[in-house]
Length: 232
Image (cartoon, rainbow, N blue to C red; front, side, top):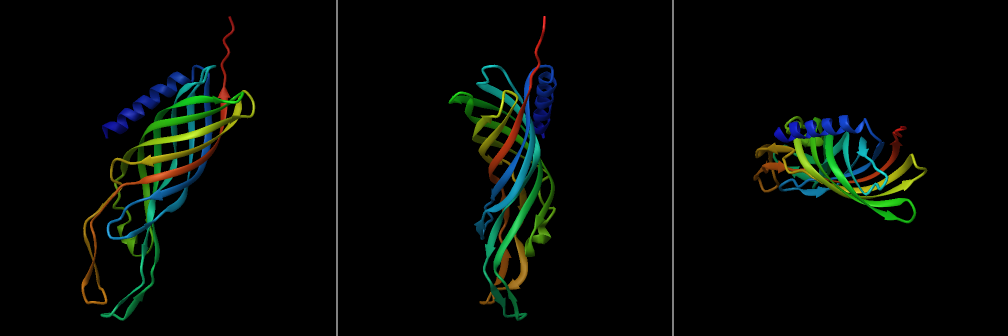
């Protein structure tokens, strides 16, 4: 929680100071690939979406900038299950993919280091610290009973690289690939008895789950310069 309070305070001070000078602002969004490791299951990527708004410092050289980003991100993962038959009940269960989604509000504070490419385009790499609040969880199939067991707050870091393409001095586009590992757990589930037996008559248990998010994001955005010119 101290991380969240510190991040909100730093972001608020940064934004309040930035609005009195020239700055970059913009919107972006794209595809998210969520990866989670669930004990005892084969995992699949979960493809969902994200979108953000951001504000970023600016100067004429535009080599290093600080930014605050806030948005909506669907994190999570998917697991594969095999078809099986319960001899006690005669019930057949289809195999397939089960999705686990976490719908998160995200706040990030970070920096970008930029490098000139050609006349006015720039390559950059970025690093940020994130705090996220989970609005809801959405699980498919027999995992649906575990909805709502998530931790409300998760924290992590973000690293990425991107390309800025100007349309004019005041407008442009961005293309970015980023990786977002969490360092706190999104959900914890103790060992569970499913109430079913396998074909050998042995009880089926779901192993204890202690799950952390890892998300890869592919993002396209628009950026705008709000330029303040001081006249003596």
